Structures are given as structure tokens and as C-alpha cells.
Length: 124
Image 1 (tube, rainbow, N blue to C red):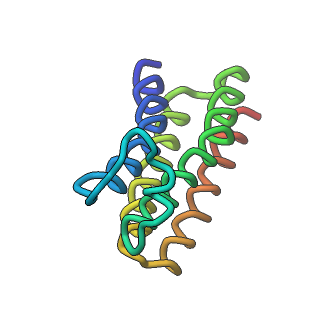
Image 2: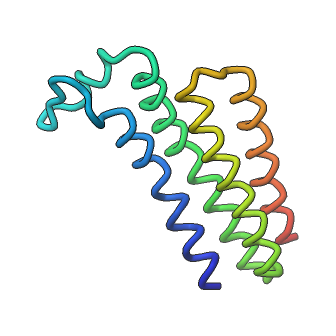
């Protein structure tokens, strides 16, 4: 169960990793008013910011699936393995988003949704 807790924490950190990528080293970044600055960004910074939003959007379904599976006494090792696969895909998704590889990114996104569904049905 400790591994599951670490994986849940890692999932929660993904949006912040995206935010750090979007903001790090940016010229004239204003931490007192970051959203307008981010809205003006282009290229990989804008994509990193979009990845941040998508990472936040993915968390509720991911957490709900994990908690449902655990509540229904699914095998914790199997749940952790599926979680780790999801996390790896999401890291790849972030890299592809920043790199601008849209088609491959979409495929990885769909696969990551498949892993959430697998986690969910592990608890059935």
C-alpha cells in the first residue's frame, strides 16, 4: 500500500511539473500575476501550460478508479502496477506535448485512459 501512496503523490505532482516547465526561465515572468503571462506564451511553453491543465483534468478519474479498486479489495500489487504504467504514460504524454508531437500524444492519452479503465475494473 505504501507504493500506491507514492504513486498517488507522483500523479498529483505531474501538473506542477508541467507548470514548472512552462514557467522556468521565462522572460519577464510575473509570479504575482502568472496567468496573463502564461496566456501570452507560444510554442513549447504554451504546450507545457496546456499539459498542466490536462494533467489536472485527468486526476479525478484516476484517483476515483484507484480508490474504487482498493475499496473493492482489488489486488494492491495489480493496482500499483497499472498505476505505474499510467504514470509512465502520463510522463511520456507530457514530453510529447512539450515536443509538439500531437498525433502520438493523442495515442498516448487514449492509452492512459485505457489504464484508468483497467484500474477501475480491477475492482469489479
